[in-house]
Length: 294
Image (cartoon, rainbow, N blue to C red; front, top):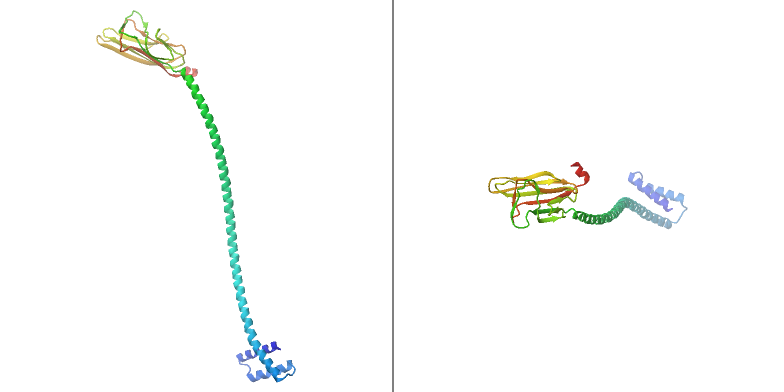
């Protein structure tokens, strides 16, 4: 009954707005419709029903539309919130994926660094081991070379007279000079009694000779190797002092002889100034193949 009344009221409003029916016609239609749908009632009941229906319709329909509008707005807002949450969730997932990728890259770099550190540690240990071995080898080689070079330390230097002064020569033939005043004789390769140097090692040797005399007689002497003249020191003038020197590098085999011979018909003079000297020393030893090439 209430629904029918509301419907009729809406129809009345529609007709009134559109200018179709007047109030009397609408009242008549409502009365006849009410008589068809409902049995006769008392005037009081009809009045109450009409009043209640009008109040219900006027109160219910606006409230329903407002509730629907409010509900629609709430649904729209919730959808927007859901979209925002979905977008935020997608962004968070992307951030999480990026963080995971960064973590994997860092883990890879950490593993590489650990492997590099391990390899470096191994390399340092190997280097230390090799250094120790090299150090031990070097010390051994130094000691060996020192012992070997001890036999290769060869040098001598001497002058003619141990004391006093005087002439030597002239003679009718060449003679071997004996330099008795020994300054140095490392290796004892020089013999001051014979005046002969004997090579103890195969190698290159340096020799020097100096002569001194008084003018009027020639002063001349030669460095001789195994009986063969090599170089000479020679000077001559009618008066005054005479002085000359010469030197040579010789390649000697073990046992080769080197000495100084005074020329025949010449003389030299010596005193405490040690003007006449004979010196020699080993420059460096040579292997057999090196000596052959030379």
